[in-house]
Length: 301
Image (cartoon, rainbow, N blue to C red; front, side, top):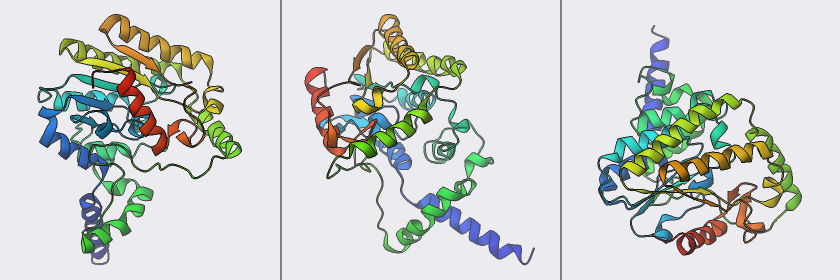
């Protein structure tokens, strides 16, 4: 116990330091706590829309509440959490892509399960008890180690950066200086294989959460806009057709049953080269172009 006590103190101090370090989850929760009643357009979904829609260019009262690997389950939780305060809400913009219907629960994502910790600690998602692996930053050793040095620096200097701007848009993807099609195809092939559906039974769970969001919007007279963001042609040309058919079918069901609108920009030829950070994510340049297109073609923002 004597030898273990210093180690325990260090671990507790490390946990406190890392929790205190600013992150996009805490920032977005605090922003919504302060401004939910004034939001008119809410952007939700995963990384495809996190790095694609710039609220400041869309309309003054828009906010991007999406995050990397965010599933419809988390979108539904956030909509429920803030729903009673969204008195000014007019539009929900929701990402739908080729992998969204087939994603397993976040807890089962091999590379992203640790994000459950962030929804538990910083966004109030009470799906898991605090005294569980999802209640401690320490539970994910690799991410904890990556954050420790910046957290120490922040404790002494008060300086930190988070991967989103003041209205929630993801800022980690800058515009590349040049476009390497060979490297882009190589990385796209890896991502496509990672996103390839391996369990078709997962569709039911994701569909249920998607329909809950659509039904909530219908009941509250909020316009639901489903969007498939642009992808590089070397990426979308290799996506399995069956997967795309399921995605389009779910989007069409939302249109027919809940009055949603759907816009598919996946194969949009206006996006080329340096408009992309990788095969299925836009760069900053691409996001600026895409947000302008949304404002002009969809309207109501």
